[in-house]
Image (tube, rainbow, N blue to C red; front, side, top):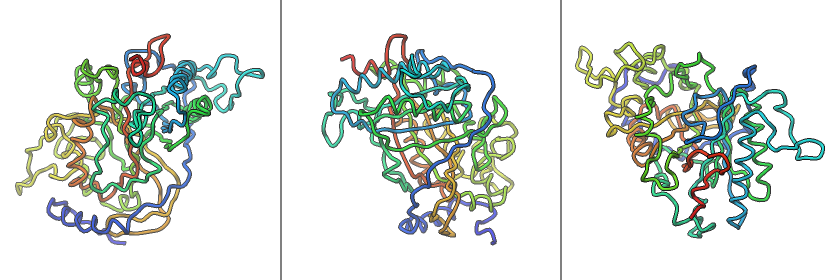
Length: 422
């Protein structure tokens, strides 16, 4: 099969193709995913422990672990006291699990059941990060737990973006848990325990396991497209305060952060047939080094004014990296902490030429990004990307959630305690 894409991208050509493709959206509704499976790597032999208590929740600024299990739940209980009791149970269990201990003291013949799948594996740098969705504050106009007046202004209903093909069963939710560890079994085992502790209070809504690139420690990880993912992340404490952590004006969310979670399917068969030169034009970076096109170092500031001999921008106007650059988004930055996923095969219809349908790899990116305020973070950056990004011909956003992740837990406290203090 010949490559249907031109050797060099142009903004005008892409926008024309985009208009035609969006008109064919009805042909491209994705099929339901096959049940997810996990990649069980050997993990670490050392029982590394990440602190659970602190000013901020672990799992945000924590160096990324190798595996993810992201789970979202609806609260089925009707009473506020039941919700608070659940969060207290989850806090106690999370503190033990992240220390490599059983979820509850006394587990055994006379205690609660333990699946046993993580026996002997240790903590494996497990972190458990918790968030609250809009449905926790009100649903269908009903103030369920007396919390509606305390819903943060930043916990918005995300707009519908161009190209979204969101599956209802992969959207929303009242509570989320991000479990990350250097062993897939440890991450899943932790979510299993927390689900058990929520019996009668919560019901599962959606979940997505994921895995990292397994690259050298300290290097920017690569996604399934083969490019480095997270190069433009804020790195200094000052930048984290400016872009990631909620400030003094955040009320009970002070010290917390807002999480946008979106599973993004990648048309890997399509991408893998594209020549390297065009892939780099789409991304706006060199694949091997991660440097901006025409530059040498991955972390070198983008020279958006650089042109080739014909006067064309070296970094195309509709390339992924250019559209995401802080220089074009009023200085906006987000902390990307994404993981790849692989759900096996599914019957899929592509939304871009050549509009193939059939059994294809159901794989992509579990996009997770953290910010001080999604209105000036993800939404500000993604509005133009959703319309003009050349990468849109290879990716489809199939799910979405926004969660207010409260500050860290003090010893003796519980997750989100400040929300319930009033």
